[in-house]
Length: 140
Image 1: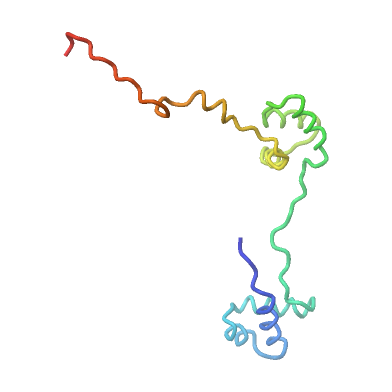
Image 2 (image 1 turned 180 degrees about the vertical axis):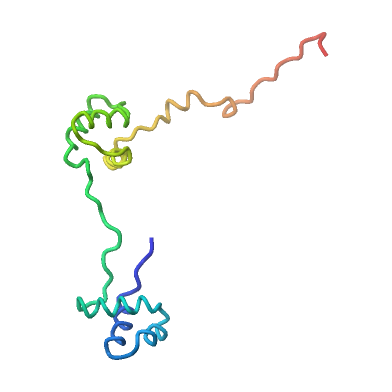
């Protein structure tokens, strides 16, 4: 993720523009783009500060209101699939995407990885080497 320029640099560039220097000369002195110098000086005039605005954002979790129901559902049947939960939520009138449900399950720490079960079905190459098949006498 990108980081904004420092507040010190922003204030010095915007301050020169507000003091009367041209935007191009202020941008050239501090080696920043002309468009950045314009935006910083406009922000300084408009708000009184050249500080950067919020980067990105935090979306409200769509399933926040359904948390209790989902937790009870996982307690009752811990091996329920996400597709099954999507269908049950749709029956309750809540339409969400698979990704939103996955994000909720992951954030609550409810995901289930089948590592132990998978190790039983491991390929033979993990342990001892397989025995060679003996040659049958008389065949060539």
